[in-house]
Length: 238
Image (cartoon, one colour):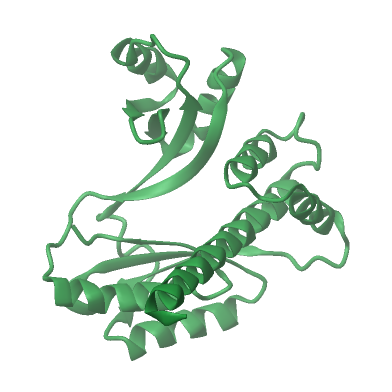
């Protein structure tokens, strides 16, 4: 069938793999939210917003229901949220967030990826000066909203930056990490439709690399992201 078919097939499998990874990540987040609260989204604000994330990612309803059921099962292992920090090739800072039922296994795996691909795993907190932790909300753009005025309106509940993503036509709101609950409450109380909400780590210092150097770092990042225990990977490549 030729190279074009093989290329399309490879891209299709990569897309499916990315979707599966997203579903796994959201599923683990749901388990943690239910275990720390309730299985009822009406009384569990964190779960409520995660269900929105699941819908935004087109996560099948039965997969979501299985995650909630799993969280309430006595057989469900307790997940722990672990953060690993280190430097990849060419001094690029890499921060790894994981949700695992076996931290010993996870740290051994992550360390081996760094060691094999030109990096080194460091100690927790060593990259605090590079990454700022923020929360982000994406809400539907009803049109006609003065974003500067809206940004000013959100300052009192921890909002820091508001802008329109023209590609998705969603209004993005960045706020302090600790302001997640207050921002969610304000948006819901005032009738804004939250499409997605999450946490991000944003580098305040970036490194410029050549294309070959970027490829080396990306090889390490992809290897880390392939690990089932890993939820998110952040870096400071410019």
